Amino acid sequence: MLQGGEIIIILLIALVVLGPTRLPELARRAGKLASELRQAARDVTSGLEAEVADLRQVRDELQDQVEDLKKPLREIQEEARAVDPRKLEWKGPKPISGPTPEDAMRDLEEIEGGQDQGSDTEESSGQ
Image (cartoon, rainbow, N blue to C red):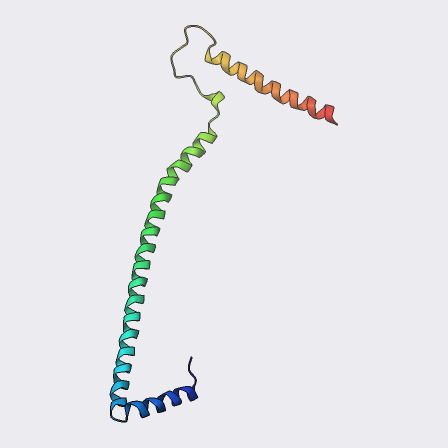
């Protein structure tokens, strides 16, 4: 940035080169140009701020829609976690041959019970 002494030197040189009649006219033009540039910068800034505000609004609306879609999914996940498959009643057709659903559930309980007992023996033997 120019300091006071530098500005005075530039003005004196301009006065000598341009003369006292043309210097005020050029100063007015320079002032007008600077004013127009400032106004253009303000217009660009306000236009960009308006666009950014619009984009933020669109982002917020999209986030709200995403949240609206996530809510039912969370509810379904919570319901799925709450369901114990051993308490469900078989709704499908009865098998003609092979194990019945009751047999399968009994086998599952035996397997799960066997895993619990096996882990107990491993823990006690490791100590």
